[in-house]
Image 1 (cartoon, helix red, strand yellow):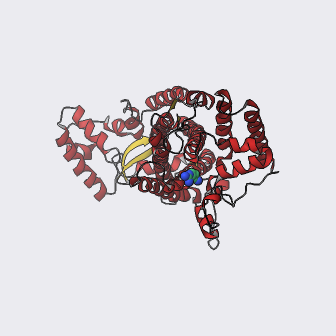
Image 2: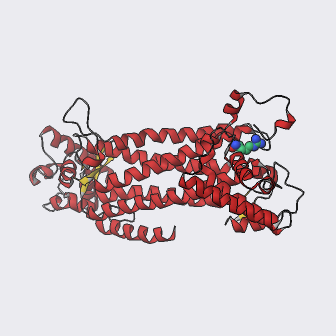
Length: 458
Ligand code: ARG
């Protein structure tokens, strides 16, 4: 049975109904659909479009339906076309004619746009909270590792000494931008489309401002064609989530490397690692690998939305029904990855000694060695060449910059004195980088404090 049956001479083919139905995807918006319908019904009565009595029975009926769904008394009929049609038919079953009046001055086109926006706003808030929790875990780990020296890398080659705190704070900055982007997207999501009707509003004297206030939206859409067919907000949120996933995936890649025997910089808690079905010794970082893998899904969701929209004439087209599957998948994936990564990272053990040992190899203090000569007056490029030759010499003689004797140093430059050893100590290299954004413990600690203050404001 479809509401439009009177218009057609034949019943819909079962295959058409199955193909057309979106309830398996959009049933999760039942609470938003009910909230939006209650606000609409209240406004209709306020403006004298329906009676107060009908409005009240719609609101009580919908509230009861919500209770029944949530207590398991009422199962959502998966054969219905979508959540909006299911609600109307369930309500009409319960309150008869009053239920049939709910759709006055409304179309499913503005209704679905409203529900999707409400759902997106609710979920964005949850993701914002989860990102903040993630940032807090990173801040705590950074605080505990202000002095934990590790090699910093470029090209995945040991490059210069940094601290684990400094490394983690890079991810804090990325996640802060993710927070800002999602927060920003809310402004353009909280624009009320209801009242746009199917495409050209309505002749009823509806009060859109009242519905806007009721639903706590920021503003009302100013063009009805755009109101029903704007899906920028879906694209914007999914794009912000794609970028969030990119950050989680980069961190995951590092965690995978750090867990390997080649690095052994961290040890995952047994509760957040997996074994192998054949190799008894294995301890695998599956969570991180899955996050890295799932990042691709969200990129795919973004692509789905962009391509879905690019050729659509105004206004609503059924193609747009595909928006929810992509948007929901991006939201679900972000939730899943954040809520699993948070405890995984929280419980991971940092193997400080291994980081320190890795930092001792690879001549990562070579820049500081060149800077030593530069600070004594030698032009940097000359100093750079000398240290290049020194590194080559050290490698040939199986030495490090720490174990080369002063005599050997002086054969490369007369400027070397006893204080070279202090100057190239890894602790010195880190502590001397006191520039804003640098790894010196006092700088990173100040950064942690600043983020804690900023988080309160986001
Ligand atoms: N299930 C539809 C969707 O998600 C609701 C809107 C249907 N509108 C229509 N004119 N068929 O887009």
